[in-house]
Length: 431
Image (tube, rainbow, N blue to C red; front, side, top):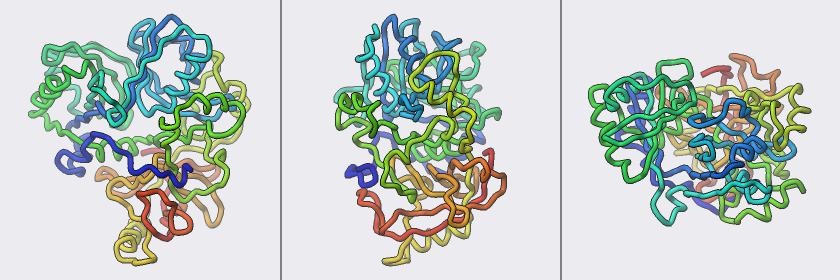
């Protein structure tokens, strides 16, 4: 079902571009860029005296310093230590938190809240495409070398000191807004600082207008979905894993609780990695680049399994820089190859499923998986985020990405008839 998902391409009220994707990609490195994130993510709010306990007993992350204005890239697993998903956790108040992002992780937490005896109320604000009303909050993300100058100008003065992945408050267009400091759209440690700001949706147009006006002198660029997603791949974001919930007794009750048309029912898997067993698509945090977010200072679902895995060999996250000549060959074949055409590389974002899983080979040996792939003017090449066996995750090593799906392509509506081909790539251990 997941490989041949009947659902069409992912829809959202998020323009692919506002000007052109090249300038929009480049702005985060040169000046500043702003994205409107008000539509494509689901917000789930938790309120009540047991909210922190619920999150701590569900998430792999440490909660030793969690509280108001703290945020986390929250990882949740099934009892076998396999990932269900990730979400951004916003610590709003002492007994209030928000989960923002793809809904897989939030759905699992809601299930625990409703079935685990927690004193916690759950309310949902679905992404715009699935929302019958208007969104509760606006969200804008601003980043780049000039981002902080723009924020201080629009705030009318310096911002309070703020640590990475913590929140602060500022004033924009007479409205109080909250902002989360992060570097999702810039390389960590670089000058590309970023902040995600949010507030009541009715105030969004005034806040956006003020930011755009303040940003004129600094070269602020308003960017669309293509620059947003390709920029996140630059920094190593592999999107979401296949939720480890489709099999096994430990998640049976959860499957029976889930509505059929939520995130898990609409999920699609694409790419050249093929298995008849859905469990072969499951990953642990250690094999998905999130081992640093697993902390054994508290009890949580999946802890025992993850403790047993901690000292084993794991796959390592890498960047795969694709060979330019092979990419040109694939483009030529996809356009002029007739019945033997290659799977198209839609520039600049080659994503055609919710979960992308392409086989990475050394000779005939499977050594890992390639996930989201893109071209950016900042890299100057096609590239992807991959996960390779430790022995093969070597700087500069040559590997092969198997591009396209088996047997002429699966029956996903956005997959054209094609034949598989190979693309050489070089391993990079950092962006």
